Length: 609
Image (cartoon, rainbow, N blue to C red; front, side, top):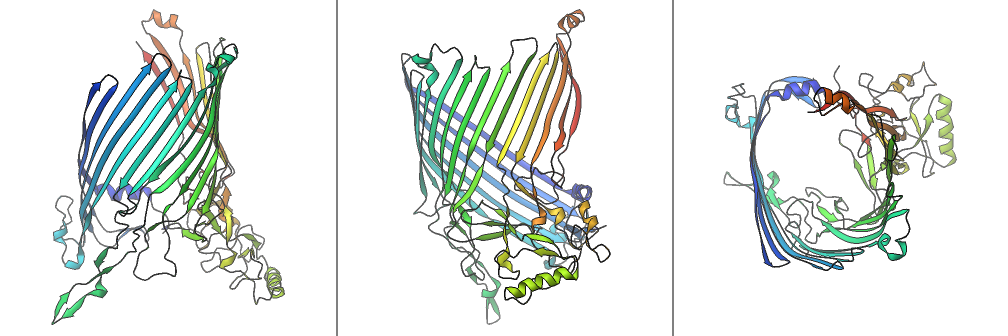
């Protein structure tokens, strides 16, 4: 049965069997260093990465599904690409140690790089010579069956000046400071350069004289850091208004066509570096000869002047929005690792427990709300001040219109609020939306926060043990507090797709007390983001496990073998979750028919002669 929303992976492999990709790549690096005087060293290096690629593919006529796997005529594609990058780095380092007390390391440097890309592509259809070795664009019968497009040359350059100083006193008091000046051709000349300082301090408290006699304290270090970094990961030429040939601007004089050009994209000459500023505070602790260790960190990272594409206020016709420095986002949380290792007894064991908390919040979004819809789904996410970046946005529901009495009751509620009808076009079997703004009727203004895709806590627990040749290792991992949008609850129009079994109990006139709403293409539920699609993404799983046995040395010595260990291991062996999907392990919280995590079991041996 055809399904326009999904692809057949087996067919995809077969259909792409004629794809051919040839790449010639050369990359290398040369360097040299010179100790000018004792402790003062100059180092230079130059690296290149050159790539030439060619790909082509011949496809026949097929129709697996009408949306994503169909080809109404045989086609031929070929593309050429050329990428060339060089990087030149120069550093001057001074390193000096005075006795066992003072250690100073100073580095100054300059780097520059340049990257150039360009390409040419051609596509044709209805080609006359359907042969994988001789298929070519020229065999297409008409000009309409051929398209040739060039990828305009793109040149990106960067340059950086850097300075860093490290100083330690008695290997006990540690200090680091850096300063970077980075320039990028992706920004206009007024904001081409960004300046990013950082500093860090550390104190090995356990090395102090007043703690030397504390036998149970093995290590104690307190540390803190602050720093800024920059980001220029945007398209080139954002600061310029580019022109392109536009059919509407062509003109005809005396029967001769004169091509016209026009500005097709918005420009931003004031675009500048995205800047992240982070504060870290933490400590390392070791107890009982480091049998027990603890690492703890607090981080607070604020990213401002975000490089984002926002809609043009008031809308636009023929002009594509471009990047701007849109707002700021803060990420904060705690990270820790606790470890215990006891190797003093015939039975040796240990564990490591690590975890992190995470909070994400948009702190500035220019007093607006922007809404995005994921490709091929109805999943809506939103961004606004005071909320997580990209939270799920849609309608909350409160049951189903099981009977006509339900429809009448909610229309009476609408009348009490001065509205004509609660939800226009609502029918029996549809979901009852929540009137969030309280005006007595359902409109787009009733959409609200449906959940945060970011987990509040992620962690792992590892356990190891050994006894008389046997060894065991277990590794658990889990995530808690995040939401997942499930696409299997997003299809109200078909009973032939691969849907969740809960849809077996959907509303029909013969099944009015159903748990799920009706399946109908014209229902009010189609094409909307709803809370019934949002689930807790909590899970705990046994990520890996291994059990092994090492045969006694006296046995191995008799047969001339150094060591022999047999083992069995498994991955993704156990899964504990209430999520109604294949897997809740979704990076962005949007489960668009994601494949389940694969598990495996392996047997093997390690042999040393």
